Image (cartoon, rainbow, N blue to C red; front, side, top):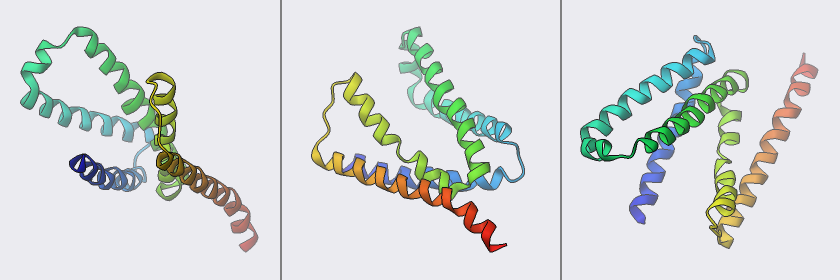
Length: 152
């Protein structure tokens, strides 16, 4: 379990830096092209790793597994990435990243509904803190344009 938590923290650095790199790239690219490049690059790296490390497992898979993986990829990597890149180009990484980070709340709710999982009180406290943080971010971004207009 400790290794899993360590790996989660390591992935945190990858995900947080990806928003910064995406924002920098989107200064010179339209969001759709940026999303395409990102998805294509990720597909190539992941495919190379999967084929190298798990070739026998991949050939043994039921073809329906590839269909589910395809739909998963379209929804999460293609469609969600395009929408995220559009948000990054409009609102910036500082506002967009915290909003995206509430995805564990939705994952918890869906796990409760579809997988019959039950969170403990610490998870509930974390969800409450996430919702509170989200409320602060949204209210701050809503108030900011009027403050900037009054400064002119």
